Image 1 (tube, one colour):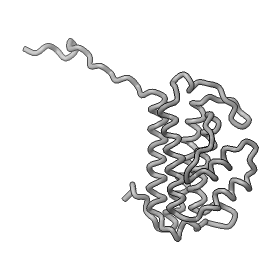
Image 2: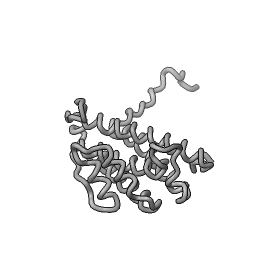
Image 3: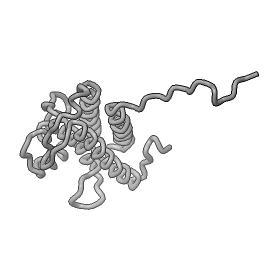
Image 4: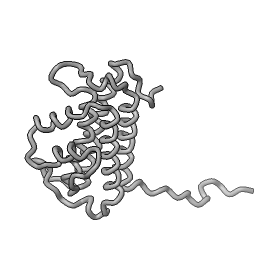
Length: 183
């Protein structure tokens, strides 16, 4: 005879994911999609923009990379060497002007270089998220005009990236490019 189910030992409930893992889950999902979409978009569509005065598809991709460096600068990182060096330097400089950022985004037209800049920014951010000491996540920082924490910077970075991924998806679909994960 089997014991009643209520008398059996309860199964262990897995611990909830750490703050770091939750941030990485959102960030990794957005970065995988952003890179896949940029790789799926034909080179000739990187200069497409829905109207004058707004970013082209390529500029949106460069903005995703550049703004990732901006968020990382508030977490204490310095501009890196490599394919995104000039973009990172413009975004990580305190007191930047928007025309300067727009020029840095527009300076690169080649799909391969844009994707390389995205990969570099996203890999650097992922590496930072994985290695930042848990205690530092609650370290207070000033982000523009508001006080937050390193955790807040990383959450905002993931949200900002996701917002521009949505913009890039709309640009791609308008150009009849189906996001690879939707096929």
